[in-house]
Image (cartoon, rainbow, N blue to C red; front, side, top):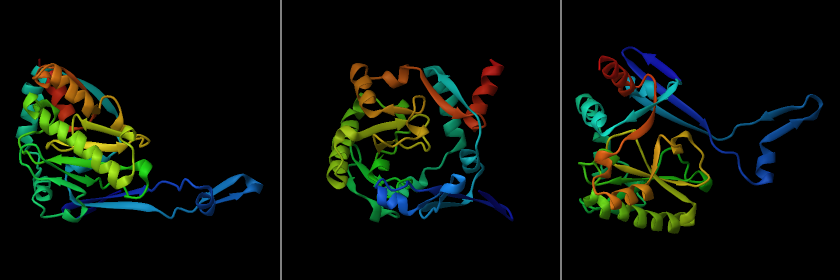
Length: 257
């Protein structure tokens, strides 16, 4: 829901939390009226988020719209995507505040403060911290020079392997989830341009897990091990909303050429 007031906008996001898996709890929130075959649900768990003030980018992010696939060559990245990122000065100041422990420090579940190969692990705000099948944790690296998978090279392998091993160990021990049930991936394009890795339960089903959005961490490590500058040379296909500024930027420049 988008709400406007004076010169500022706000977005309220309301999501139904998952139904309980056990039969008794589920039956307690469902009433089946047999005579008209009508199911009535009493929604007890609603998760809501407020973004205020919100920018045009926030509005476009949460507005329903068609999507498209963009095939980005290495040249496209350096000539189109990277200049877009740099010219729009997409702020990651809030990420630095988290890394500097100016906020959200109480939510940290693992912290390796090494400025080269260290990272911080926190539950994602999309997860309620209870339903293990919806487990969602993010690893945020301390290095401030890595925007996305496009920047990753052989020198970053120790960092990526740290994230994999220390992250898996932490999630296994804290949430009692076997590592074979944990999916680790990076997004491209990411929602913010400071390297972070997603840890989710294998049962977690979301569009953000799909091909065209998620790249498995193991695949990233393997590709760089085979070719040190793999992500500086390869083409990457990514999914994006049609009205996203980057998609518009691609359409404009491709038409001109």
